[in-house]
Amino acid sequence: RIDAVCRSWPVPVTDVVLVGHSMGGLVARAAARHGRAREEAWRPALSVVATIGTPHLGAPLAAAGHVAATVLSATDLPVTRILGMILDGRSQGVKDLRDGDADALGPLTDDVAWVLVAGSASESTEGLGSRTVGDLLVTVRSAHGPDSDPDVRVTRQSFGGVLHQTVQCDPRVVQAVVDGVMANPPAPDV
Image 1 (cartoon, rainbow, N blue to C red):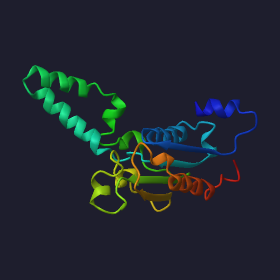
Image 2: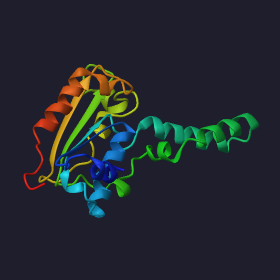
Image 3: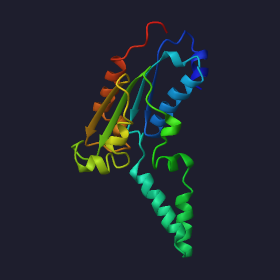
């Protein structure tokens, strides 16, 4: 779809920036990887991938859903089996959030800049709350993504007092994304 948009744009596309919240960040990361592997025409113009509250390393709530579905399905009572089946009916994408999918996403690439933004329900982004519940869906560590090679341009930022469903609207987060994009202009040869 990105390729189609770039081909149909009225002027040549010289800069592509992908921004995604939550699972949208995983989609943006996968697009960067697969676009590069397939040598898609738009990919050399990609300068920045910004993710906000993205469960790069999985989400504890999704892991809890998996455990609950397994336990309920295994309990030999009709009501628990039904509840287990309902929980197990979650989409494959939501199920994949349990541990993240490092194989499908691969490492952060060194040919684009990465802006990885995390939120935390607590005011502190360093304490036990941010490590265990983060923005109530994604921990700060998970939103900060995988460790990367020193050659990878990555900015990791955290903001306290925001929840998962609103982190992308927080003015501090919006400014961090804008600053990350502005700090990483497109390559001159694109």
